[in-house]
Length: 192
Image (cartoon, rainbow, N blue to C red; front, top):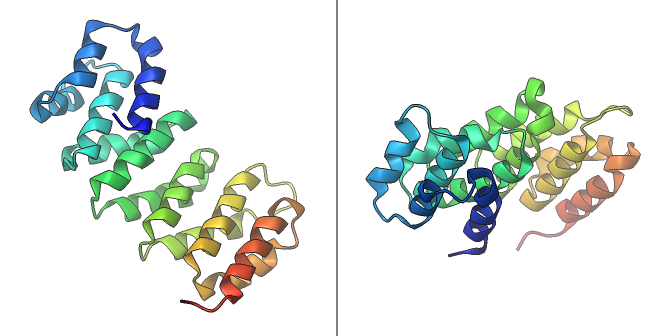
């Protein structure tokens, strides 16, 4: 059991009441049984989350849609678990879906994990999406400045020079300044 799965099971034990169904879902080896949880009506969210996580880590693409929904959940812990499972899933639709979630301004309050996932994926969609989201965070009173910080950090990690203008603009905002400055320094370093 890896650390992320242990964290998920600890968190969902209370939510599930430690039920027999919970115990079955964390131990069952049959992927068909896990996939049924994703399609069977009336399943609690915790059960769907366990099934999607386990299928995702096993590389079973039937988990994709459930994991994308969890990636944009209001509960940050669910988002982090979904992102971890999505990285293991390796589905080629993941970068596009993460970019769509990150750039959806109506859901920006829940964009932190999709932004971080984009940086980790290093996909062609990553840099344009992170630039777009960071541009939208360039306001002195923006309540979602943490998303902007994550964008600047991700752009620095990706090292794409297309990010220079938005990172330079972000330096003017106190909450974004440090991350943007560090990202610009990373862009200035010679590439290996």
